[in-house]
Amino acid sequence: MSYQVELTARAERDVAHIATWIASRSTRGAESWLNRFEEATQQLKSEAANCSLAPESGYGDTEIHQLIFKTRRGKPYRILFTIRDKLVLVRHVRGPGQDLVPFHEL
Image 1 (cartoon, helix red, strand yellow):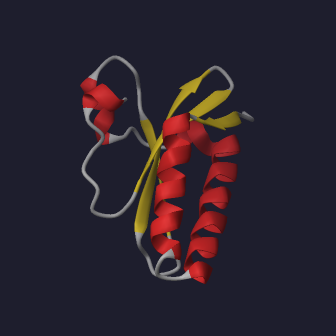
Image 2 (cartoon, rainbow, N blue to C red):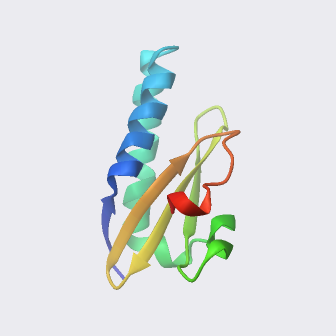
């Protein structure tokens, strides 16, 4: 199945925050991370339903899925999303060491 992928305002802020943090250390690293994030969102267009449930999914009735992608150096990042019909809605992007998303932020 082919899905349309959209980011919430919160997910866009997460992406901007992560990219800015990485860019403060390495411009090339930030570009690489953004490219890897884009590849992961493209993957969601065809494989979203195959992704596992996120730990945050246990908070309520809504199923929260996750796609874990890694940087060239192996750092894992999680894309947290919901699926409704043919829409994948990216709600959050979490980096290494970040806690689970609190219930009230989902």
